[in-house]
Length: 634
Image (cartoon, rainbow, N blue to C red; front, side, top):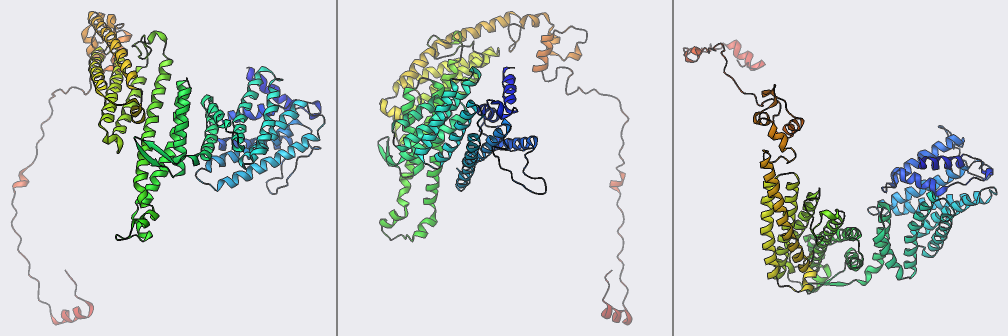
């Protein structure tokens, strides 16, 4: 109801004459349109199409059409024409259409670079419309102060975006800072309902200002951008900050020339690989400082996108160098020296393959850590009464243990992929032994949460057997981890996931909780037997099952028409039995029928052979006719 009242008040301002000094809430109008028509999910095309339809409707209502179906008659906005606030909103939405189209082209320019020129032309058109709007506003003396401030901030923002995309950092920074100051001042003078919107707008402009400052030469702006990315929430804001961080990393990537992994120095020449290495270094620094697991998972997700781009570029380069046509085109023969081989880039293959293995390991490492941070986030949302005393294990009171099992299964699969990586991991026996020990530990955790899922569904026998298997896995994992002899530095470099000491503590807590859950399984099973129920039904329904005859529980309902069947029994029969109403397939009964006779005598009758007929001799007339007209075949 409050939202509708605000919209009603806003549109009473819009449809009032300008001379009455209304306050046109430009930011509120544009933000409402953006959130309701696509930009909540970053769909600029949908928003642009909506704005085009809105402009057409507004021109029709204002009787300001640019011609008719047969001819075009452009009309320009002038201060004399603007007698209604809707004309100002019309000009704002024309700028919004150009801006939305430019942002759509900006997203498509990643795969088609030529679209960047089209994007710049759209932004120039938007800036030109902003300049016209500024001239109109200057010649409207009766326009309210708040409307002038809103329009001034909007005009400076759209002009700053143009200079930002043109990489004119000084002008862009000045214009965006001016717009930010106006929005900050407006936030202190409006109602509480609108104050949050101005604060959000200020937060949206700040990353672009910091990026401009970094491009000018302010080194501290890079850290501020990373801190903003760590604390931001929302799909659109995350995408904008990720784009800015990628551009910033591209500028810093020139300082990365090589990496050292497992004692081997790997040169890094590809641009996207340098950006990925830089993103990994920055992500590791941020992860040590942040307390929130949700934010850590988001940082791992953004780093994974950069690593995937680097892997694609590395594989394309390996494919290009492995092509036999590369050797032939370079004119390299068997007897030639290795100097020409270096010129063709064939000797780069081992270095690129090592870099490819390192990037694959980094991808699996960040994927495992992202899953573990998701597990921590999920565990923090569990109620305190459903936690073990150490807060590392969830008890059977939690209603969704299968979510933990799914995430631990993902960790196990990724660790198996780490084992298959060639190179240093395959050659080092200690690293492989520690990875296998961690796999067994995570399998024990997965088995435990699967047992809890069966326990929640009152399948006590399956849950008890899984808990027994989990006990065996815990003992095996503890012995394997104690035998593993690997330095902590090498473990952090080549074995993803939690450290050995943390996993040992986690396994001890798990062993304590397994005994408790096994007792719960035994108690539930004994209560079920005491109530006369069968395996698979809950203890609450056991009293109902005990009062119902066994034939009614097992047989279809059509077999007991005179018996009263409780509702719970009917529902259980409908969900558990394959044929709860009637037996299916139907039982066959022998019935008398008329015998069927088959006449087989015809199969044993032998007919006599027919004599062959000899053809009659042909006379001279027929012979001559056959020569002239052709002989007919009979």
